[in-house]
Image (cartoon, rainbow, N blue to C red):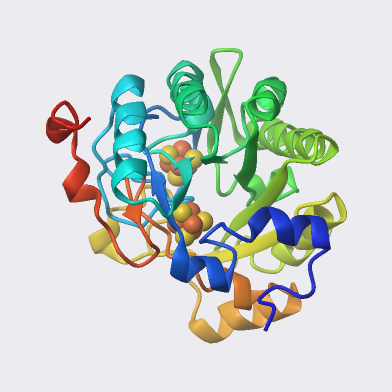
Amino acid sequence: NDPTPELPQAIREKIQDHPCYSEEAHHHFARMHVAVAPACNIQCHYCNRKYDCANESRPGVVSEVLKPHQAVKKALAVAASIPEMTVVGIAGPGDGLANPTRTFQTFRGIREQADDIKLCLSTNGMALPEHVEELAALGVDHITITINSIDPEVGARIHPWVIWNKKRVFGVEGARLLIQQQQKGLEMLVERGVLVKVNSVMIPGINDEHLKEVSRVVKAKGAFMHNIMPLISEPEHGTYFGLNGQRGPTQAELTALRDACGTDMKMMRHCRQCRADAVGRLGEDRGAEFTADRIDELE
Ligand code: SF4
Ligand code: SF4
């Protein structure tokens, strides 16, 4: 009855109490996200900055941004009231590593006061290489990188610009930098034994065929899982400024691509694309019990 028999033993041990990756853990353990990272260092055509980062979070949701000391307090309060809470992640509402001071203050604060809590991070990868050492030193053991392409010509159709050395770099040149940073960050994390999952957003006619190559490359480099998510293009989730009229994939197209990439859906079907401030077991959200105006009352 092993939920993940095809993964190596060392990886299975690391994810066995992570609710996002293990069928068993999903019933017994809880996770929370703390929304401490408002800024972003790239632009995705499908992003609507009125809402949380579309790479990991549920579309069309606005999370309340916390200061690091509030996030630490919230994590400790949640851990005290939900003992099965094993994982605290930062997944927005922008990019954790575009807000390194806030992100690391939060991780350090939690580490110092509750060293049994697992830390995880979702990032677009743009600023990953310069932070790998610190992430590994803090024992952040799950990192998700959103990688939509490994070809700058494809990437430029999804990411119109990136910030590099405090300047905007546009088009193919910007996409080349993003891809270079993502791949370097992935390699550095794998070398240090950090578990890396790769997320990709499937955009029909733009990167759908290309994602087979992305999948092959990231797995060869040691990503333990590749999760392909559909572009969600309904207007109620926001106006996509660069992909107007762009449709998302049908369920049949998504399934065919996931099959072609060998995505382990037994594991990935747990991922609910949670809010950047989600709290509780997967599928439940107790975030309203722990909002900023109540955190000061919590001990
Ligand atoms: Fe938006 Fe997330 Fe892309 Fe940044 S990485 S532009 S927050 S979707
Ligand atoms: Fe887990 Fe997915 Fe939610 Fe992240 S978004 S906490 S991986 S279920």
